[in-house]
Length: 371
Image (cartoon, rainbow, N blue to C red; front, side, top):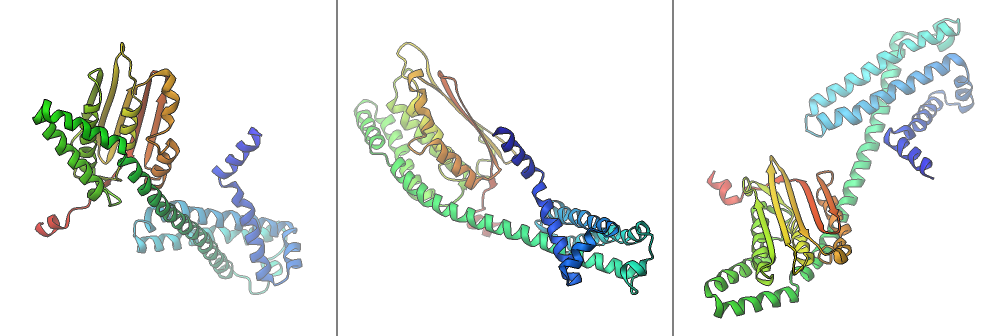
């Protein structure tokens, strides 16, 4: 079972399943050219023609894959259209130059003349033009298949994003406006009013900012990273009101370029809420949460760890009611191939490390007009 699975992975990784397609494609092209499938099959079994057929398959496949995996990503996808067209034509000409001599090789192997083997009109110009036109056709076909596949994947991803957006909105409404959290926070502020009015006033301001962020500032697909960090700090400040003095909290935030980068709303919040929800409650041992972030270029390195009780560590796979799979699915949809997530649980501590490639934040219209 494992060997069969490994074989399939190997075939997919090196695109070996494409080989039968190109053999079949060139065979069908030969049938169309001759207009007789019996004659085409007979010619393929004739050794000199077999050599010509194999060279056609190899040279055209090289041209197609050079276009798909080098020219398109490097030039077409970067809107360098004129250079791309020139290089595609040059690639097809190069493939035709490789194919043309095989006609003469086939005649030599058959101990025959060019005209006797390929017809009276046979000449190097005819061989080259035939090879060039068929290579252009193969390249166009390969590019059409690739672009169609990319279009279907993009369309499917957009549909998944729309579905995920609706599900996330419902989950976040249920999760962020958790009555238990709101009640405890308001209750803590109420008791602070008589005990420490200044702290109560500051906590009420944090609570107001928290609600304002949830209602008004997180409706866009991307928001400034500074807004997300401010939200996390307000949330942490309110959570500290509910925790006893035995909790040791370490917060190390890299504040450079926070306004320059953008992130999807609530992308980090799930991990922070999970840490406070599942942090240990040892009466005689340290209970701690450590949060840090660093920015390198446009990459965000976010780390959060907390102490846990061994008997409760199994519950940590559930992130704030959303679940680890849903968090990873949201990352897959919003940041495909742009993130790396490591989660470690040794029974005494739970650690999450997230590397996220962020986009540049949009410049507000007012600043654009000023500039």
